[in-house]
Length: 505
Ligand code: SAH
Image 1: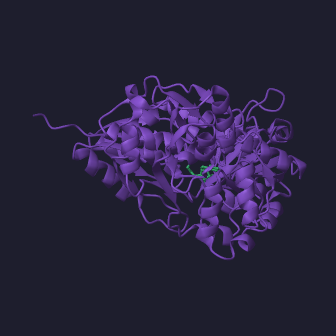
Image 2 (image 1 turned 30 degrees about the horizontal axis):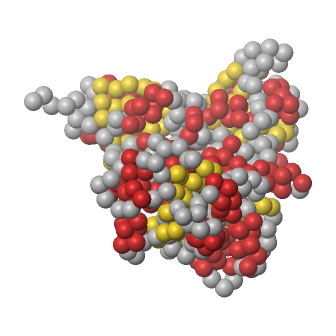
């Protein structure tokens, strides 16, 4: 058997927003055996290569814990062992990224490689800060410059005479430690002191910040704002267009850190909705879904599906639990032939559709009361109803349907509990949370249980949002203030309620 040939992909991971990795970069990552990555690359990319060995070779200023020659050695070693190596680098590998040095080593060692370009941070920061780097009325030339120079070096390697006036827009990478010198040199070599300057840090992430000023005053502004790297420095008339063109950091929830308390499995969809509005979702699940103590009740009900008329599902968790058990028992969706399936809202319907089934009935108001009304209207007298539910679920549905003349079976299909969490309290105590969202009564109960006695006091200054009336009731019970309640009671409604709340402020 021929020995598998190793290969190294030098991949630009972009500036931070995970959407800015190229499709090709993603495809290479997915086939990697080893991922070698940096400090600036978004760690979320590592999920693209779950099986791969991950090696962190990041460096921070002052903390060069992984020298370049060691990185080069590492790439060679793994490639020689026949591995596919993804070398993930922030921005673009060939723009101030030492990708050239790594590639030369590979060539010398006779190792196969490819370079996958990335969105370099200057290009990305310009877009996300609303600064077109060229504009026919202002400038037709553009320069990318490293602002990182050894302060001990007497003679600057940069030719300030040429840099200062030969190009319209200048972008400095790695220049924050040297900002004062950069501004002085530019002015000393002919650039007007009033030339607009913008510094953009953590571009394309929810932490993006921008300061604007001129060559004359940006240094004092950066100092008083304690504005830290990583940042890019934009110099030129085009910076003035930002006022008209900014679109990213003026979105309604921009920069807000929103605590998402729902289960890890469900947090993603909500996180994306928040992200669209500029917020950062801090996922801290206060609910963990676990199997019931015993499946006896549910199994008995599943074996009677043929005699069942109506199946009521009131959450995506119930859908999951029901079908998982059905399949585990050797059955499949055909067992529901002829059974009327009622759901509580669009999210439950969506979960059901994942199993190839459409709901026959859906509640108008997304609450248990709505399902009951819909079923009453349909008529349940004398019918066998199966309602697989959470342990500790409200008795409302079984009671109301029994009163309407149905024979109700309500086995426990799953239970939810508060997981152990060591980071919830520190997050709140350190003031790292700008808003808290509760998407069910049990998220409220568990949240309070996890924090203990001083829960209400701990969060008293943080706006808290509720997905609907029941969740709000539970919040009141625990003396938690409600900033706004979603209407309709969906995740979209929740985001809308947050937008309305912050718009008033
Ligand atoms: N290869 C990278 C640059 C690496 S040099 C690229 O193409 O972008 C590191 C410098 O890049 C930092 O000092 C900073 O100036 C800039 N940088 C990288 N990511 C950034 C970000 N998200 N926001 C602002 N500056 C960033």
